[in-house]
Image (cartoon, rainbow, N blue to C red):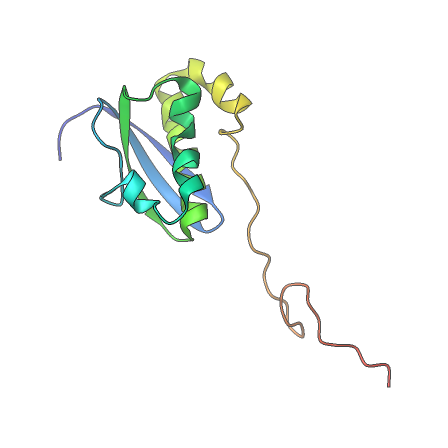
Length: 132
């Protein structure tokens, strides 16, 4: 591993977790060893979500990141990478935090799937009721 100085942030969303490292330079950003646009090719909106912290702070082309993501689906992984990237950016420079907060990139989204209860079909769906 190279001895480059990096800033790290951890992002979570639903069941996915992302460890993101931000490094100075204009190399290609990667997620799990693949290029970002190749990894999130399934959902076109996901690439915009991932790159939003760079767009908000005007740091496109000045920094790149590597992310290791596990768990969840593509949408949850994209949100977790964006949160990890935002956390890494404001750990690098605290003055970026107000701009990231205004764009709603600092707060972790607490929503997750509700668990299934016993005697029920799903979390809230119940068996059909019969009066007689």
